[in-house]
Amino acid sequence: MFQLHHLNKSRSQRIVWMLEAVGAEYEVIVYKRDAKTNLAPPELKKIHALGRAPVMTHNGKVLAESGAICDYIARQFPESGMLPDANADSFNDVQFWSHYSEGSFMPSLVANMILEKAREKVSPFFIRFIADKIIDGIMDAYYGKNIHGNLLFVESKLANSDWFVGDTPTLADVQMSFGLEALFDAGKLKPFKNMTAYVQRLRNLDSHRTAMTMMQDAEASS
Image (cartoon, rainbow, N blue to C red; front, side, top):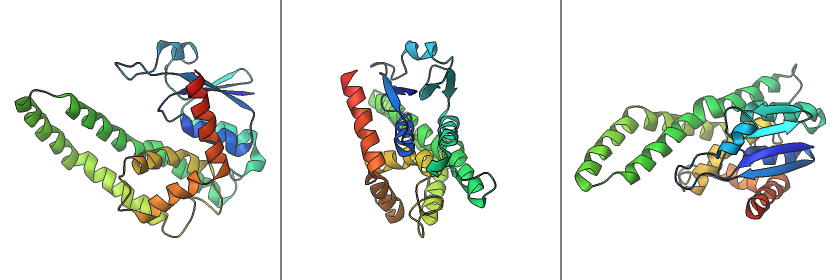
């Protein structure tokens, strides 16, 4: 059985969907963020030295990093189609979107989230004014342009296809889902009809619905 060490409000929700999509037997072990720091609890370091989620254990192996975990799961279930044969052209496409999700798409979104949280905490007003100027300058100079470019790129990709690679969901969709769902929930995909339709489409999948229910039930009972 696969054991997923899951942190609430984290990217590890993708792994729950991946496990459900391939029909694996799995258990979700929930860890909760520190209420003050919002960081993972020290217990996660007992599973993996990085102390971050997701972490998965299976047959004596301990795996970290979403892409590596998803790749491992897909290789255990080759019939699932989540990872095409290595000789297929689509294999490289799946690999691209899997790496793009963490290498290019997510970093700017995370940086933006951190900057906005910092903005919220700054006081009094005259310091807040200075902080706003600095944060706006950083966003205008790099992160904002990077995010916008990524959104246009993904929107264009989804203009003529339901999924990132092929006619059915693959590992590429699992990897890309977290960032797009977060943007959707924050109301930031409203100008982008293709990405909006994509999130609605994936949330209508039985595997995704079941996975999110499993995750929520596990969090509620922890």
